[in-house]
Length: 304
Image 1 (cartoon, helix red, strand yellow):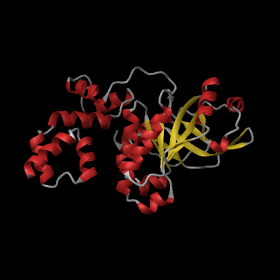
Image 2: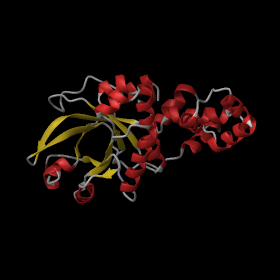
Image 3: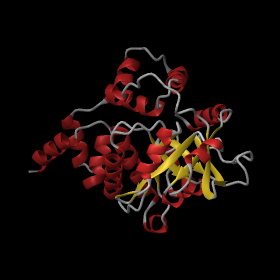
Image 4: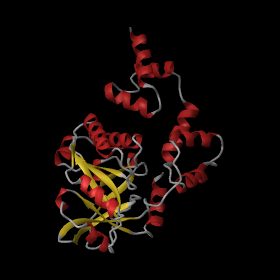
């Protein structure tokens, strides 16, 4: 989805406002009947941090089911590399395996050492690595961030429009909207007080709980686009977005199918240094839809 489309979609979505909270061990004893009475419709539960499960997750999930409150998850990151972010994603997946959250699974990076000790490119790649692992496991990925993080610590052009944004920007009231617009589907507006507990209050602008048709894979959609089933240009973008699909991801796959190079051609480019080295090369080739092992095998044959 392009930037202007994100803005248009956000304006449309903000007509819908669903009240929610996010929960962790800090609200361990909170009453779910009290949440229900306060009008809470969803909860974003901390599934864990680093590679550890949150001790309250199971209880919160059980109570969400018991009191018909929709739920999603977030994972608080301590990762300092792409590999560590992937390990956190794998732990998250193992923790929530078998559950059916209707809301996304969000990547939450905000540690000072991640800000001071990592480059924008690395932080962005870590978020993408986490989210893609989550997507591959069958869950909807998202990114939690405040405006400063999106502007200065992530490459927002690679995050916004690709993943659902949970924007953290505190105001005095959920009725006093954030001035920032990143096409966010959820907004953390500030501190709410429920059942004697301080909880982060959230407003969701899209009804994740509404049942949708079974989603098709990116490959299936790309094949349909090539078969002419999704029109062209701006109309294709509109149709795919309205159906709940990521236009950019679909179009990228369409382009890969149309213009994909042979293993021999890619191997020549690798030898010429066009695809980087090590994990960077693997990530770039995989993202472009190529089989890294096959390409690397050919490269090794060429340089012997």
